[in-house]
Length: 118
Image (cartoon, rainbow, N blue to C red; front, side, top):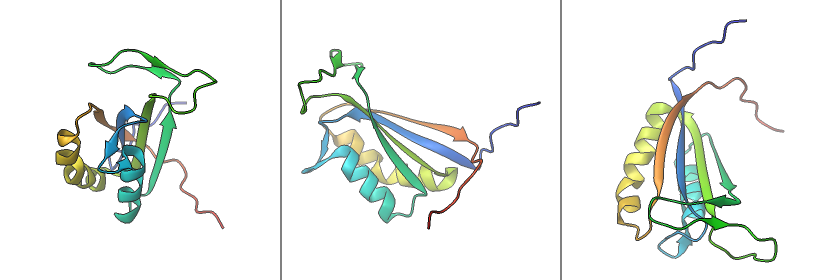
């Protein structure tokens, strides 16, 4: 069975940062998910990593006894490409002005099912 090409009409905006990064007084991932919801982005998910590093940091890893530690976090948003580009344009300056680093990518994706819950 031939695989269909991804419909570039939709994309995933992926922001890689740290669980301890903040935007003002809020944790970065809280800030971005709340902002995405207010702007009507279709969906957002935050993943916490168990190990990772950035270009200017040391390796951080999870230890079961530590609950408040610096770990990698991925904020993933899915919507129409144009809508995500607009969202990113609205947060780009804020991300650039953060004291800590981050990585932002956008990839085309194919939505196979979008079903609302009851």
